[in-house]
Image (cartoon, rainbow, N blue to C red):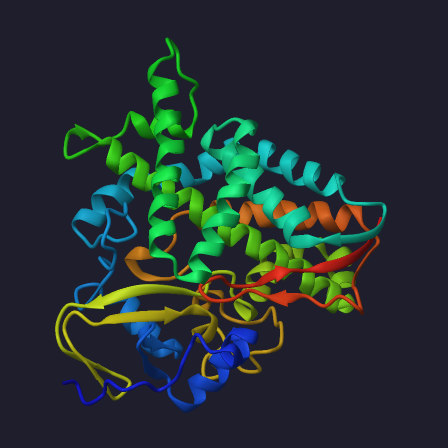
Length: 384
């Protein structure tokens, strides 16, 4: 038995779940490489996380029991699919999608009350994530509500640890994607959108299989719906709680991109990712055996005071290359340019359409529980 393998903490405890960010800060100081039955080895220190991200030979991304393109792949297989994916997020692709992205952001913000209370996660975060992702993929607006319902059921099953329900939900989502593929195959002239273009891609000289297409589109869509929604909630709550920064953003709109990345460093929208040790290895003085799972806790690594002095403070003078909001190494998020553009347009629209955003004193925000980051509810008062 691995002598390092004993429970250092319980990441599912109510004390941790009440505020994951504070709990991870405390754990990083006490035990930066911590074992639990639930997460196995959790990495909470920036240096340890960077070591893992930069050594994919020792710390494999192939941590899923199911096909996951390209998230759960390592080079050289991963490289083949990344080569396909990256052009969808290059400058030309972002320029093409930019007008639609801006229009959706402004449309969602236009639905805010002129003077009243709003729950930012439901009214803003979820709406924006659903509309923007369907538009990017070329999917119809009729999918917004079914996908909203799916997200709610998926979150409930995840929190309950209901593996059977999660399996059924995965199949249901796969069915949504397969329907999109079938619709295009039955058209004489399919639309020239992201979904159609992906269907025409090849790897190793062959077309992508339906299983690969479904996995790829599932990863893009589920990841986008969760992280963009969480990001909107975090950003809106921060601005409501920090009127000085809200005013500075109104006065200096050119800081919007830097400010977004720094706020999301402070409060992670994506809480974790997994790796598998391919051989016995020591990390932070702990011996990890081959086949054991490591959980990268972004919400801890991005607040490490050894890298980010005064980690609770939003500062625009930090080195952006050290911010792990979108990861690092060969598995760095390929969709980062799209996510950044979406959040910039949303925040510009929000600031441009409002005069005041403030917290609701008698209705505080409710933190999300692992594996989600950010908030479940963000009640705010909006004045336009």
